[in-house]
Structure formats: C-alpha cells, structure tokens
Amino acid sequence: MFSSAILIDYNSTDGSAELVRQLAPRTWKVVPSWDGEFDAENLDRQVKQWEMTRPDDWRIALTTTEFLVMPGFHERLAALDPGPRGHRVLHFHSLIAVGDDTIPLKPPSAEPLVCQRGVFVEPQRGLLLGGRSGGAFYDRFMHVGLGSNYVYTLGRHGMSGSVTKAENNAFYDGGIILKYMWTPWPETRSRKMQIGHKVSSRDRKMGAGLQHNQMINISTRAADERRAGALDGVAKYDGTGKAPTPGTGGGGEPAVPALGLLKRFFGGGEPAVPALALGLLKRWACGKGLHVNSVTTAAP
Image (spheres, helix red, strand yellow):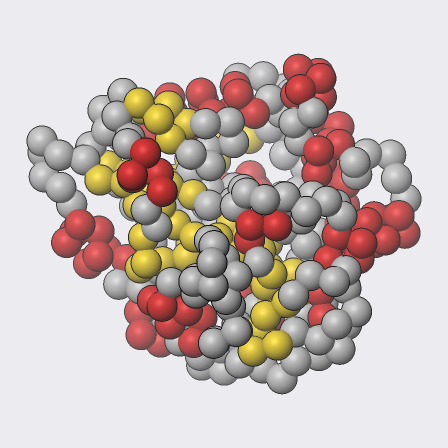
C-alpha cells in the first residue's frame, strides 16, 4: 500500500525491525529512536520529524499492531488530494481485535491474520487492563498538505494547529484501523509484557502508558488473567462471517455477527461504525483472501 515507510526502532526485541529489513521494499527503512526510553511526547516529535521529510505525501503513523484496511487505496487518495495549496485530514475509526484465539494460528502465508483473528470489541472502551475508558484511544489520522503547522496530541490520537476541531471530529468512512491489542494470544504475550520496561520515568509519573506498566514483572499466568479480566463482559463482534466460538477473546462469551448489531459507538443509538466501514468487514471474504474488491492490509 505504501510507497515508503519508516520504522522507528526502540531497541526492538519482537522481530519487527528484522522483518522490515528482510521483507520490505527498499523504500522502507529502520531508523533508531532518539532515546532508549519509550516516551510518548518524544515519540510524537520523532514521528512529526520523519513525516516532514516527505512534505508532499499522504502520511499516517501506525504502530506495528495496527492494520489499515482501505479499499481502492491509491485511487481514493488521488481523488481526495486537495492540490498544492490545500490540505486534507482523514480521521479513521479503530476496532480492537481480540481473537478468536481458540483457533490455532496459521502462518500469514496460509491465511491473512485479519481472517484468522477477526473478532473485535468496541473501540471507545480503551480496554486498559480491566478499566473502561470513555475515549476512542486508537483512532488515527492520515493527512497531506499541512506543512509544519500541526501538532499531535499525546499518543497521536488527535491533532491541533492548522487542523480544525471539525476535522478532528469528522470520521472518514472509506477505511478502518484494526488494532491487534490482545491477539494473537499467547503468541504476542511476551511482546506485551516487555514494553513496560521501556516506558520513560516522565510517563510513569504522569500515569501514561498504564496498559504497559501494569504488565511489568508479572507471570505469564497473571498476564493471561489480566487479558481475560480486560475482556470479561465486553461485547464482541465477529467481522469474518465465521461461526461464533464460545470463549472468543478471553472473556467467556461467544462473539456475535458484526453487521447490524453495532449500535453504541459515538453516542445516542447511532451506528457504531459507519456504513462503508461495516461494508469493509462484510467484504473481508476471508475464505478467498483479502484482495477481493481491492481490500488490502498493511502493518508498517
């Protein structure tokens, strides 16, 4: 999907950097972080610095656990391009992927990850290890033409500067972010448990990175219990069209089919995810792979 990508490497131990070096196009590169600690404010500054090296391009900052699903990617962006004197901001909804981890994980060459782990939960809950947050923490922004007059709010979940409040609040209906926060499990358990050790002392004092800090120095069994506690009682939806499986996502309840049942996002009985985004879920066509109807995925 992307003509170029930059991976900011915080002394990675999960294999992400090596995968990029081995498998990605030559226009993708791995760069060392400014600091050894994982500091949210410094990371946001680094992201903006690297974005400014490609000032005329569409840009989006994703973590290694976030997949952008957007049909007709290049065609849509070409149609949305504001021209040399304008700018445009696309605000993507996010869904938190949580399973189904009762099904053995196959290599992605055999079946795409989003087809194997397509059960998701309501994004606005946050799922901070059992806590219930009121904000959609994992939404992301793609933008072009902003120059240097923009600032990310902490964590890059909002923007200011030349980005208006209306642009922050308007969601783009042509794509969606899948955040692989709690799945595949236990395959990603060790990755999740090691991140907290890198959180900066400043973030710890601020109470930032709670979801990472609470996973430090605990046993694998305790990690499993925290995951189950975070997902217990949370409504789960199956976007793959597969039959629901009891125990999906670690909370003990079966997932229910997604379409027509997402009613509680973004207030007052409005559809949880916009119609086109729901159409993306419907067109995953996981038995045939993700390239049906131009749907593709990427995990930069």
